[in-house]
Amino acid sequence: MNVRERMRAVLDAEAEAIRAVAVTDDFVRAVDCLAGCSGKVLTTGIGKAGHIARKFAATLCSTATPADFIHPAEAAHGDLGLVGRDDVVVAFSTSGKSREVLELLEMARHLGVASVIGVTSHPDSELRGLSEVVLDMGMIEEPCPLGLTPSASMAVMLAIGDAIALALMEAKGVTREEWGLRHHGGYLGRQARIDNVPR
Image (cartoon, rainbow, N blue to C red; front, side):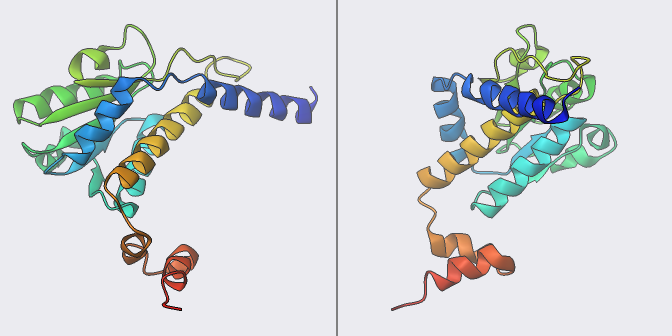
């Protein structure tokens, strides 16, 4: 195996999987749904998708949309108490068949959650039937030599989350000053404030 060639192939596969995403009207509906949310945005997923969901919640918070991650396994032991009637749940699952995620969504429905946005790939994903809005990742071939390790699918999931968060931020008219207020520490926070110093 040529390591450099193999790494280039993985990077190319991930980039191509992202480029192949069809940005449909459902993506616009997702931004509108999140912009109109009068409660919390709750993200969920399990395994690698759970890490992407947690990162999406963090990005939303930093761009002026209150959000929290709810772990589907912990939801079964009381964390479902986070869910309110005005909330929107964004669920990440490539297969759309993860039992813990589906159970969380079914229970959230009983609690009267406002909307569910599903980010999924497989055509037979059960997540599709539990979502008002489906963000289709497309069918993705993983570059893993075993065809198993989630890599290109996670790159797509991450990119979709970023695209939604940044479009939402712009739709809400978040200013550099408002962004800076949520980043009182670190390099980026300093940059936001430096650029707002009156000249």
